[in-house]
Length: 445
Image (cartoon, rainbow, N blue to C red; front, top):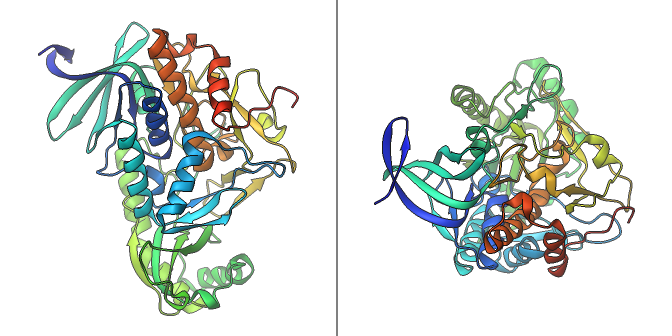
């Protein structure tokens, strides 16, 4: 068996692939499926025993819309996945034209796994990224750690979909962390799924009803969560469960921990402890103040807190707030987006939206997926090259999944033609995306 040397010791090389995708969340699952579908020998590495990442492990069970007011923007694996998830059950489109939905996380786990395996993706679960294998400034694979021990896996192209840019950072990529000036990060949230909610009595305009009640509870000392409002909630239809609106399941996006650095284990631990200590007070508040929640119970809490931002890898281009709000298109645009800029205050108190003009959308350039000064590596998901404010739009899952389509296609083209990702003609990536239905209007379109 061949070996690779790490810290003066030899570790086994357990596989060689065309494409290695690190992270099996919404972006990574789509990237691996897209690459394998084009014939690349593809490995998908995931730290949990199931796919879905933020959507399933962190239980953010809502996909926003990808309709700019004129047209739907989705195509490819992302579009197919959403329709297969809808057909599988345990979900419903809240807006069919926009493809927005609330979904049962277990349904997503099943559909992600089925699509990956059907397309020939090899899965390696319960596996952590421990390092990057580099030769000069080219990434040649990754070092992983799992129950089998430490291993090296080589790949012609590596795609970093870890969310935190773990591979890129370990390969020496430059990155930004937090907002300009003080580096503070957006708060983190532990998602909850509640049972026995009377959906016939729920007031969905919860801002008007609950914000003053949260303020009163804080004054009374019974609300210690940093936020002054719930971020979102909605009914979840579990696949196979009775459709009883008076005994419904609801997800709650409202716990909050501030000053959490998702790249630091001690900080993550503190945030997990803090948000889990907020669960019982949250339930008590809802039972006393939210119509329909009087007899609710905790069905489950997410396996991990949801992280809104960590490393933003510095790429050949950095997407900016102005690019998003100006609905800018690029010669190398490969991913359309129309989501508002949604940045949560570092204080945890509230969040604000900045919206694009109706009927417009921006594009993410291919250069945002190319870490500056590194070859053989693509980054996608919330670790792409964007500023703190632009990240407030591009980090949402309905935008990161199409990123997976783009980088998966690019990686497959690179391996097929013996090129680095930077050498792949972007026009070929764009043509492949357009052929599968992605809207890519030209500059000025």
